[in-house]
Length: 308
Image 1 (tube, rainbow, N blue to C red):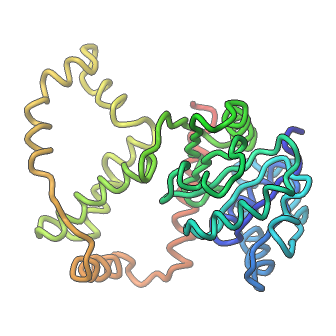
Image 2 (image 1 turned 60 degrees about the vertical axis):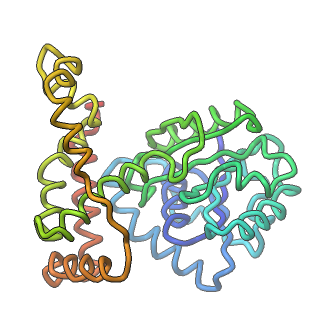
């Protein structure tokens, strides 16, 4: 098995989810997090995630107990072929972690960062030689959502980029490659754009939080789970394809774009959204909502299996 030994640095929600997926694929995991409760948290997370991954057919070769907890980051990376870094998104912490692990790395090991708010070039400042360091940004939770955004630059060994893509594909992920740095990468920027307009519609009194959310999951969100927006619009114009769509709807979309809301996420707006989402929850607590989310995503993943 390629990349048989893995390591996860950081045992929060993202790190625990990655660890669960690595274990499900039959690989071993060495975990480091300074939190004294990390072992209980991660083992509980793996125990909860395992039945869902089993339902998706991901655990056939897996062993949930093939994980060990280390007292230092350097100890965790020793002998690891692939390291997923998930420490807090503060540059001093990232840089300190990279400086600690670099001397302990196995030759040829690949290190991927889950960072969503920092750029690759910012993080490379913590390395003497960042050639084997890539961005490997997941969508939460990584054990359930397939997407990983992969990025290297002119300081990155091309083999590390392709190696990371191969590893992620081997454990069931869907990768996209970024060709240049952009704050927030790709998927988070798309989320931000949609959420900005969702907030604007609520603040303007066009619809409630619940109904705007409903407009997404019961409408275009259902189509987006099948294909991306550009391909869907290409199909929407029939045999004329995207050219016919653009010819017909250019003025319409230009008018909508000119009218999109410009909002700021301040205390007042946050209060409106919090009140709205509490109403939308209809009394369900966080655990119940999370379980329902995961069940829906699992059902969709199973329905789409083999169709792509």
